[in-house]
Length: 67
Image (cartoon, rainbow, N blue to C red; front, side, top):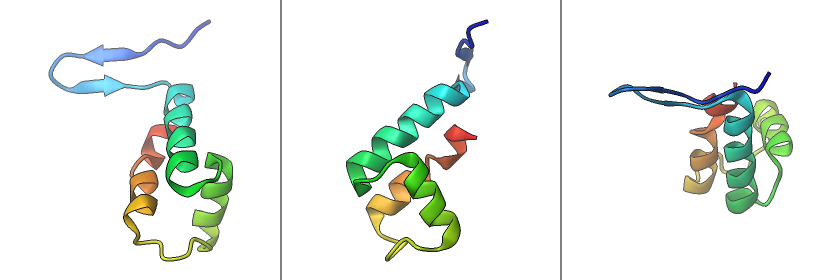
């Protein structure tokens, strides 16, 4: 069974877990030079230096897509 993207008129687009993870992965690599797995571990452990930097916040804002 293949997961498909749902579209709900006027409410937005929903992503599959795999699509959300891919978006997180691409942005973690682009902005922070690390994989999504590396970022998630470091974020949860409080190991991200200067966590309020814009590039970190861009990636943080995508975490909900990968849940």
